[in-house]
Length: 356
Ligand code: XIL
Image 1 (tube, protein in one colour):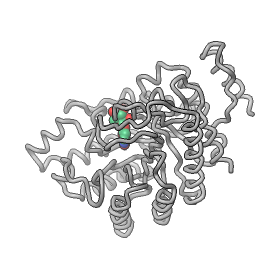
Image 2: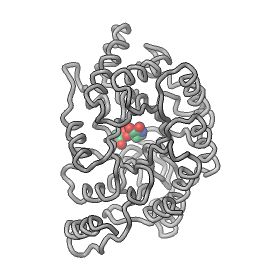
Image 3: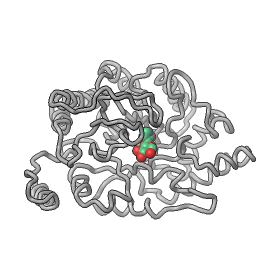
Image 4: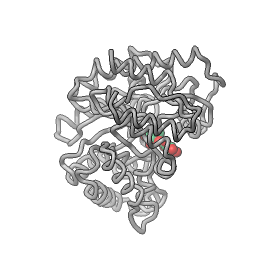
């Protein structure tokens, strides 16, 4: 184990105060031959030394959970808000991590003033999108490595675009390719992703996305990657995940598992829509989750050629911080660290998947 890993273990033990056993797990990013990342909520993260120490130990890539979304960057018409993003830039530069940009256009984070203005004057929206993307991507040119240019542009379930958004309703499906072109104009070297959920399991949704991706490639729309959010459940069959990963990798594009977590319970994909079948995490469940994490990493390594492995990013890496509990309003244990910031068997499973 490298000397700085040992030092880190001492720091962690000190910060966790005496009773914590030494952390003996290996660093994820040191074992991986691709970047391993996590999302963090900057305002909580910056006040939390233990989580920061763990983050620096395990990860070499960082995504902000919400701080880079449009409702945070431009909460009002009066201007851009860069402060928290600049803090994320400083943090990642200091700790030699990749900063990933999540996201440019997402129906769910479109500020209400944008919706209102576009309804009043539909002509305005394209120019606004262009200026927003040029300004934002231009400001972080060469600093933000890659972007989720459009997030969740396809319907929640089944085939077809997500149509109930101001972007689709005002600009038609072309808003997606426009966003990619604007981002590429602002930073020709940035890796540009289309990112979505359930594409690893909903084949109709996946196929709709693939039609768009292949059309973009055929027409030279500057897409460089596909982001699988990969918010999965214990019972999502590996065969289905392997099938979609294989098809996606066949495009030759970068493949990012961009928001990984693995839940036991279920939900209806809507805010507050959690369905609790499990209220306790048993030893048996922990071991099953360890196996699932291992298999997910193995599939990524086996199926995605190494030059297309943009990396694997967790959507928070502790059960304490997971968005699942807040968003779906249910208990669950989807990550690799528990509520007390102790490593779970899931972490060993992930490491096993990296090693085998
Ligand atoms: C989530 C954040 O984690 C939450 O804190 C916020 O309340 C809602 O958004 N797919 C995405 C992410 O692309 O941006 C979402 O993040 C989780 C689902």
